[in-house]
Amino acid sequence: MVFGWVKSSWAAVRTALTKTRDALTSKFKALVGRKVDDSLLEEIEEILYEADLGVAVIQDSINNIRLFVREHPEATVDTLLSCLEETLTHEMDRLQFQLSENSHGPTVILVIGSNGSGKTTTIAKLAHGFAAQKKTVLLAAADTFRAAAQEQLGIWAKRLQVDIIHAANMADPAAVAFDAITAATSRGVDVLLIDTAGRLENKLHLLRELEKVKKTCHKALPGSPHEILLVLDATIGQNGIEQAKSFHNSMGITGLILTKLDGSAKGGVVIAIQKQLSLPVKFVGVGESLDSLVPFDPKTFVHSMLFADDAES
Ligand SMILES: Nc1nc2c(ncn2[C@@H]2O[C@H](COP(=O)(O)OP(=O)(O)OP(=O)(O)O)[C@@H](O)[C@H]2O)c(=O)[nH]1
Ligand SMILES: [Mg+2]
Image (cartoon, rainbow, N blue to C red; front, side, top):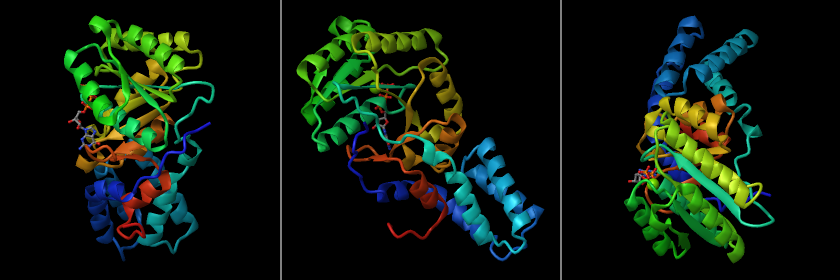
């Protein structure tokens, strides 16, 4: 089962992609009318690097464009752009973008990520989105690293009018997760969102702590967590790929949420990350308000990044 997430306006993502799109379209525009040859392909390659699409995706795109040119000697810059759009979207359709739903009890969603990536804010946005679907939500403050983190999630819970399970005496995060799952099950809530401490992915002991949270979830409710979502700050660009790999290796994440796209000129990282890890970006964060978390759609995203014209805008 998957949740039927209420479609929010894609216009906010399009706006967040303005810097990335403007940089790409102005440079592509300057190439229109040019002869399609190796030097043109090199220039396209350089333009793609600036959008932070990453080496692997760019090499793949340029190889596909080369093949296309071989088969279509009459190709123009416009047709190359369509070929690029297709290449960037290719294979992403196979990924599971919707959140999995547990139909036999609470859906447990574990949210992890580095310091300040946007975990707690994203949890509030998710809770807000679930409420719009008439789902009951429980929050778990399993960030026992800082007392302020408990308070921050508490403020959101109050504002959203949802229940929260706090850590007793800053107990170990796995114990908070266990209590929260027990409470979610006995209260019959639909969704449990577990907030965790910000950590650097190379801090091994902290990763071990997260692994313990995951194991404890499984013990408290077999099959859970149903989603392990890694929250990444889009403004860190390609470094996000290494971060995601490291978290994925130890935690087996089910999806990504890329935040702060509104402050980034390098929207290409959203494509690069999912293609390299074969993991879906389930949502993108495009601001600080509760409704600024948008379900990801690969075709619309790629189109919004590459083309100035759009029926939606
Ligand atoms: N512009 C913008 N800001 C965001 C977005 N998502 C989160 N933020 C901001 O990022 C900052 C950090 O967010 P938090 O939710 O506290 O991050 P965290 O990962 O929980 O941080 P720690 O618990 O300290 O690891 C806050 O100021 C948020 O408002 C987004 O999509 N866009
Ligand atoms: Mg936090």
